[in-house]
Length: 257
Image (cartoon, rainbow, N blue to C red; front, side, top):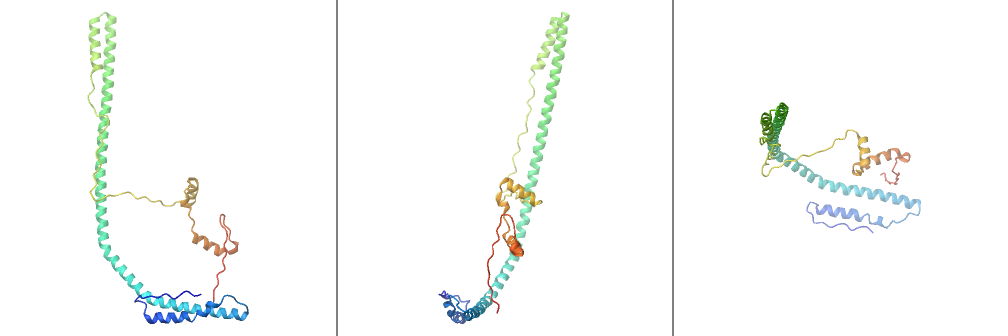
């Protein structure tokens, strides 16, 4: 049984066109009764009917296209116009964003440079302290050695005085030095503006990538181009062979008028 012709009140489909379509489709209603072919003559009649049906289908498509094409042209023209209009604010937005990103990068560079200088200064102070500690230890060791000499010479008072000086040097508290530079506060972003890094990957060695994806079980990176695979199968026909595939053959009928 044939499906019913849809009813429409769309104003862009003129009533006369709807009436003609209904008449064309009604003329094909006898074709719905053909469910089997029992002779060459019936087969030829069925083939002729298919040709008529195809002709009617082509006319229906022509009528549809005649109504749709002007609308598509209008849509294309409207989109092209607004694309040009939107280009002006889009260009301004892009330029301003570029300037703001450049500003943020410069502020971050200044902060990083200040942090580097602070770290270098803290490192210099730590090195000065280390050298000072080594020098004080050396002086204390020299005085202690001289004190031993005084003891050996019987000069107990002299030895005690030298040892006192050595102890004073050893016990002198070191100056307060910041061991690590305090972190400098990050750049405060402008309210309402933010930036982020967007990364992408460019394939330089397809086979190396495939081996890596298999090893890491990143199966999503191994999606097959089905259209390319079908094209290869069509070109090879029954001689097509590819690991992990099977050849599928479908019969497609066509009618020449």
